[in-house]
Image (cartoon, rainbow, N blue to C red; front, side, top):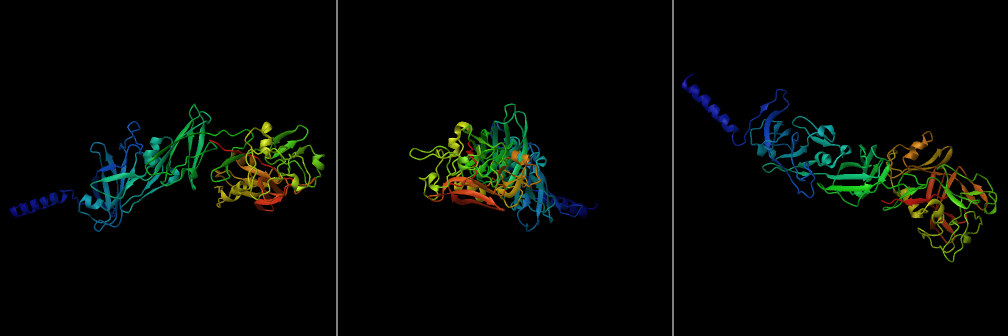
Length: 518
């Protein structure tokens, strides 16, 4: 080789060395012609303070990277030189940095800092593939997506690692990640020991679900990832069919909410479903309509939700002279009354409105929880304390305001015109219900075990005569509509009016409720 060629070779070598100095890297076109491979190494830190971030290291509560962590980087917009670019970098525990290959659309020979200045980054925690929460594409136009419905883990540690969705869209000598999600960590006690139970967390239609095996003490622990700004009190949590009351909190990204709850015990005589009757109150329904046995003077709930007593076109006689069991009651006929008021027995059939709770005459006024007029108060010695009658506003909220994801697509909380055991009525779905709509060909026991309520069309009584059994349902509220009338729920021929009103002497069904308490 002559001297001129030697000098040319040395000059070319020096040029290549210079191009690789100062973080300047040339990339070569991939053999598949789909982009250019560019080696990248970046510093990554995590924002936040120990008080608001749970970590891989639960003893120190500090954010730490671990083997298997990856960093996905992606161009925010079309880079003037490199075009689009994306890639996944691996964590190196020795250097404490993330290194790997980024694919650029066009050849790029500038600095890594210059390229990353137009990038954003996401942490892909070790083991993320097994959760299905993240989905990462390939190539220079790759992107990352996440599925909120997969944000379920059996421990708080796993949830923080997998679902915090740590990301950043700014670069300053490295990426400083910040979490985009909050974590709700639950400890639920009062469950059956050593049993696999189903969990469902519903946040405005986004349902996060999974299975947990309880401990020997009947405790289930699990955690979910939650979007910031979510009001937890508007979310619903069901564990093994039990509705769990949520705290009044609005979630903040990066914060962890440690929520301990004990499964509320379902009162004797109540169904397991919980039903909202206002923005702040939920109730259990009794397992059947109310009935009174004259011969024993005892109150009881009917054995089945679809049970009825009186029959169509029946004459029960004055004060039920020809009928021992009563289930169609005049308004407030509990058999007791406050001081100075006349108590009317449950079997009273006089057709004079003034004989029924005569001092509540103002429209919209209810007799109130614990009132002697309430059948629940009068029947406490037989049924247990705490039972009461819904007000007109509560019936309206139950039917018209609350929504349930029951498979109908409309969020409707009930289905009219259904039959159970050949009895026509209305099916009410509990707040947390996510199953299918009930049909006459369905197995009712499955729906009842899910907390559904059935109100049978038990008809009505006017004086001693009974009508419309099997075609209309009529259920009293505790609220007056005038000096002689009161509000009640009426359904017939595919329509329902939860705020109908009628003469107080009419005999209607009564379905008692009890409050849900934590």
